[in-house]
Amino acid sequence: MIKYKLKCKAQFCSKNKDFDGWFQNIKSYEEQKNGGLITCPTCGSDNIVKSLTAPNLKKSVSQKHDKEIKKQSDSDISGIDNNKVLMTILRTLKREVQKNSTFVGDDFVQQARAMKKGTLKEKAIHGYGSNNEIEELKDEGIDVVDIPWVQDDH
Image 1 (cartoon, rainbow, N blue to C red):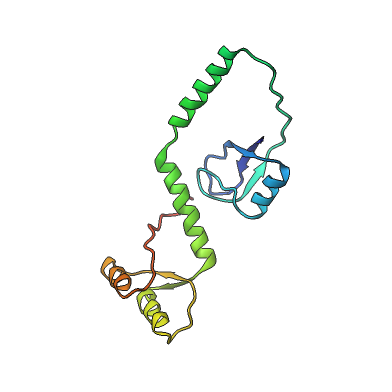
Image 2: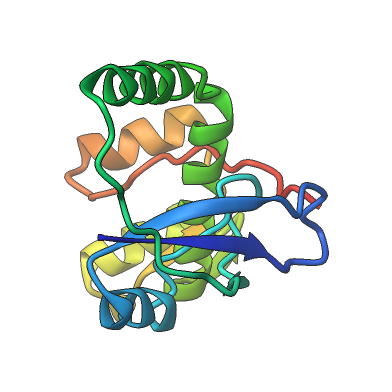
């Protein structure tokens, strides 16, 4: 495994801190980067660059030192802010929905029903509907997903 220092270059990312990314090899990194799969853990942007890196060769160390390192890394993991992680996931999901579907606004419920009836060509759409309208669509056998639409962080 190769550890790279990565940095978000999005204008709206206020953190601009380095973060680590672990990859099997450089090809794996490049495939994920080109596929938009590497995102900022703070803002969800895929405008990520790899910092210059040097090989990190592990020297033989005592077992005591290995245990100290493991203990420290375990405590780092427990300090992850779950809200930030969740917000990043929701922002990434929102970006994917926007990229792969058409926004129909308040016409969402009507267009979903029209597609189910066959009067409108089926395609991926997103828009607005009340909780009751969404439940009615589900009861009618129309496959819809209600996603919390978080604000972009910029």
